[in-house]
Length: 390
Image 1 (cartoon, rainbow, N blue to C red):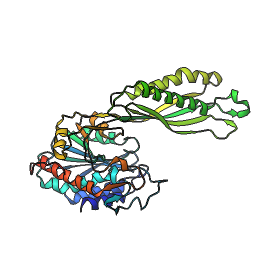
Image 2: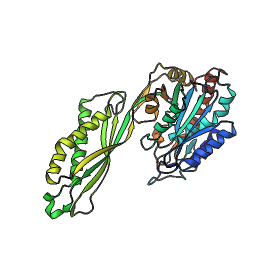
Image 3: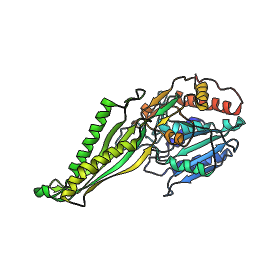
Image 4: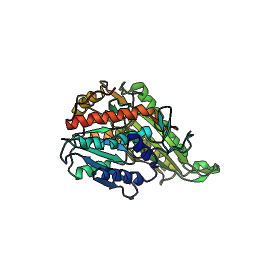
């Protein structure tokens, strides 16, 4: 099978994060078994999703992890020119959900297994395919915990998010929290007797807006990123039952997308202090059982790599890319890096195509990924020296 053949099979599995990824994982496990490679599956608590971990080469410390996530974002409400779960080629582009983000990388990694085996590796290549990346990178911590329990100590990690095969050595982190305002319900004709949960949520949202705007003015700044500051925003709001009822409940989702050097928990604490010191006293003066809660559901660290690390030097030799790019989006690299893995983000395709209708990866980028894996096999197996990609 070619990388394109494998990508066609991977795209055919609808692995939107709200659904199971087991059909894809089972197919990958069978594919690897056919090549004599055993896979370990690490299931979630529901048994409907699983990570896959497999090792090509010697069972020893060191080596490189090739990390990719198997889940994709939804296609609901998007206008596609072709079936998003059928790989379709038009004008040198391969269309389908996940082609860029990031089943293209998984395809070239799987296609390289035979090459890795033939290279007589003196250091292992580990395949780490995760779930639930697209909903805040919440799946990969359980994969990392399973690796630790097995006593495996890889030397480095390549997270294959789409970078056009350029090296990315840093990205922002993300912390998200569910907000819940519990008010006091009453008839709207006697509104002062109630506590309007929607209106208090609006005051929290405005506090978040002002805090974000203050950062635009005052920083801290890191001008490598666009935007150059930590950002805060509220992305969803739901509350109330009828126009003539003072609403009892309002829920919202708060996102803090932070510079790698900032602690997002301190920022969240400033929102919590505003709720505790300003808003809740007003609410409880009317109804004692009212209140505000903020519950973290996503906490993915920022990522900053050492540009002089062994993995960075190796990938520069392989790719010929001497730049050190950073990006504003978040990947699982933050978790791998926090766990002690020297990590680089590098993969085929462009994030500019991800999450959009008619998502695609260029055929030439898939080929560049294949050449990258060939050079990596040569570097790890001493079969042939790595050469820069054209």
